[in-house]
Length: 173
Image (tube, rainbow, N blue to C red; front, side, top):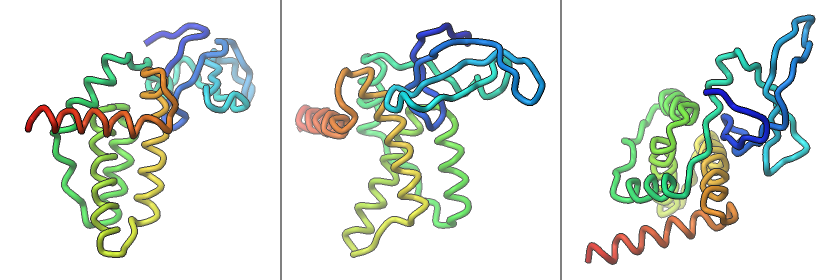
């Protein structure tokens, strides 16, 4: 997918970014064309992504409000992933899902980790540090995008999802 200057997109774990410019840069004695990205929630950061690199495949167009609502609505009845007891296997699966860019799968992963945290909390335990970090990172990136598409603040996204969930449960009753 080709982008132009000022396009908004989601880039890996950086969240919503604006393409500040596209220009030729010389890094390591090699001239290449780069997308110069600025995360919208951290304008001081600058990310250089080679236009002709596989990394540019990790740049996804921003979802619309309709698409976000559709993802949320479809995730409400969906079951979480089965919990993987083996830490290494679980970490590998989490990384694979997080890097996929598939917002539905990421939403399902967040649901899985939140439910696990809730179950552990009921027993006086906590989620493992790596799982908690993965949850925080996934929520930041996904909720940044959802907030931008919905025209709300990031800290309002959970309430928005919970309200949609309550409305869905009420309509089923």
